[in-house]
Length: 332
Ligand code: AQP
Image 1 (cartoon, protein in one colour):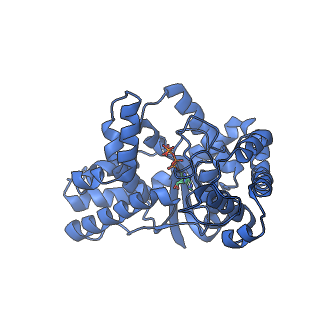
Image 2 (image 1 turned 90 degrees about the horizontal axis):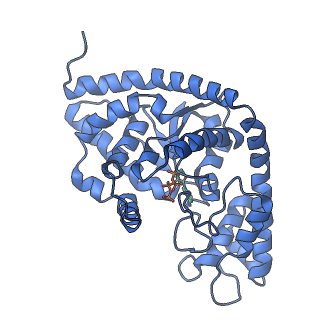
Image 3 (image 1 turned 90 degrees about the vertical axis):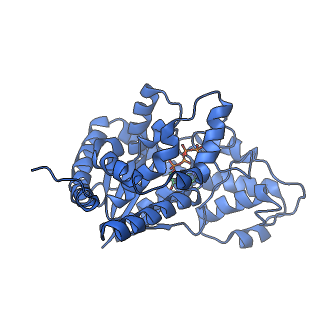
């Protein structure tokens, strides 16, 4: 069975982008076809300004939401990154294989560093180095496939490069992973700024649909989505990014082709109405299940405890092997 690993940061309330780009596939496909691990990557959420109490709340909420989206602890392993010490243990060793230049080329680092500076906050060193921690997250489990949205592709490629370099220098230790992207929904854009990704840490609100938004809020956000000049509906991500984003979202909800969908709409109004209803119906069962699960935090804690134990057992031998390979003296 293939080994699959992926994660989500508890850096805000999960969005429609997280759902369509990653989590829906984890639940519907990956956990059933693979030996799959899914992780609330809380250490990654420490790379930008954060509030400790909010981070704790969001970590539990994210885990609860992953279960509500359909992750089944009987068939996959769900855990919190900081509960498994092997991730940071491996990360340092991988920092000794990665280069400073590689880190500075990461698009997310460049974009988020600018955002931090604009907010008047310092750029944390961890923002530069966290792609190595992400490589450790992946490599510690001998992962073959990493199902992610498009924005994370570069980080998975870095993990590949690090694994190959380590294996070449110190002997075969790591499985070399690859990213897998969804056919549609790999990059859901902000409804107010359709040339920017819909990101969960975007606090401004109206362009970001959250999985737990009430139906009325979803409808309002979709109906107010920025569209392009021109009344005819065409699917063109470069010239008509607003309409293309709505068509991509509808395609991801219905399983149809965005280009074919475009042909059926005389104007933006009816398109928006259908997108709003499709998203409301897509998210409805998740919201309902989340309400049930959040009434039972002890159940969620139990799932995370068992998940961390299982994950630790899988990661330890791989990390021990990496320590031996790189020349660290094993404890007697
Ligand atoms: N807009 C998106 N479209 C498609 N896929 C997306 N993903 C994130 N946003 C979109 C995918 O969801 C998974 C988990 O994402 P993450 O927690 O690593 O990143 P984020 O939601 O983008 O959170 P950030 O980095 O805290 O937010 P921003 O960018 O707003 O600063 C990943 O597989 C990701 O590809």
